[in-house]
Length: 286
Image 1: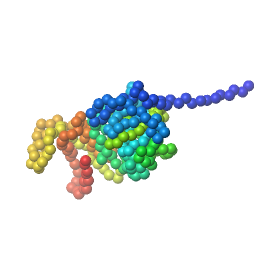
Image 2: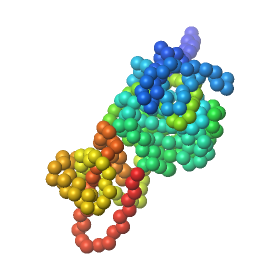
Image 3: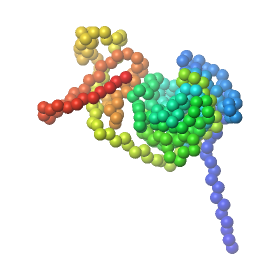
Image 4: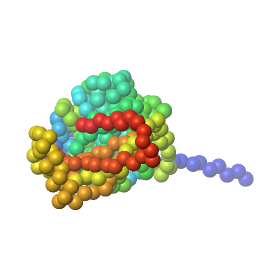
């Protein structure tokens, strides 16, 4: 007697309906709630977001997942994930006007509302992708643990692979976000991801100053050298200093440590050498 076993794979993909029951829209400049706008754009039913608007998936938190969708925009449409709130999240966005260039795809960790794109550069945090403004782009994002891979179009190899840097939360909300111009989002699916993958760590020929101490925030701007030393002396005597550590590429993202990263702070470190010698110290800031 012969037995035939037919195996079928049941997809766990969650296709998120484009309805107000599943999405909440807010104006990112004043946090005012808006009506969900669903329209047909170039043959696809899509969520339409105006400039500086956010659409959040309601009642959903995600940790390890595959997120797929089609995007069309004029400027920099993006996807936030593992969001604690609208000010702290992982963020991936497309510079649709830079298709084919080295800065077409950008990843940044967002702390306290600060978008530090100047700090996170090529070739790791900015990479290339082929797409055009106002044309549909298929995007797939895979996230597991602290690893992320990004695929554009039908590519089998990822356009980007990074170690995630927003270490405040391991799971959270997903939301869509526009910057400077309108965008459209269609065919949005989220699938739980159970199989881990690894990202090769960034290798560098440089060593970095990693141990720092930072002061409390100071009101106002420094306009003279004498004022600088007065304020520093006051901070040395009266502030509670916090010990922090730079990331593996030497970056200190100060926005991570202050709820309102819009004031001045002091940062200091000690350099200890076992002998008198000349050394080159390179630094940059934004």
